[in-house]
Length: 111
Length: 114
Image 1 (cartoon, rainbow over the protein chains, first blue to last red):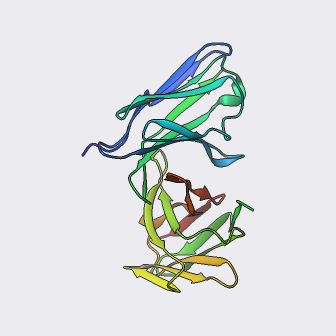
Image 2: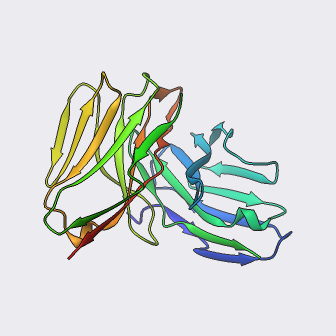
């Protein structure tokens, strides 16, 4: 199994631009999580899905952030418009039961 | 009530020494306590986990000690090696509806000197 796949691995954009991060979970996993990691705030849960349905999006910082999971094998996290304070590493993780398997992350830099 | 407090923030240990990282939680509904290990440029990966029906779990050089009454748990790394240098996160979760949501500690950056 290839594990959780995220793309792009690095993204550099300018303030105000739209950013879309992508995630392919491990086949057969029914839960998907989006996290943001920064030095200041550590690892924060943004949103999670179960069976493609958003369960808890209370961690989404603002309306500029949105996430979708149109099918069991694909999810996106979109930021529009992006701001410099959104610069962070964004992780996607998937799970079937207890253990969450993390992807390699997308390092986002907003200039 | 959802917080998991982790200490220390950073830890430096000599090769062969014992590394100890501590975590405390508040929510008594938590029933699963994993530790994740993260190397630079990588995502966190599960290292070892424990449920509150046991007080200790050991896997190789890694041991979790769990104190339910104190609502504390700790990771012990015996015979620490330079390859163990990484960031360690404790976490906790409880059954919540249809999925398990992890609450992570703030992380401990471990450096093992050769």
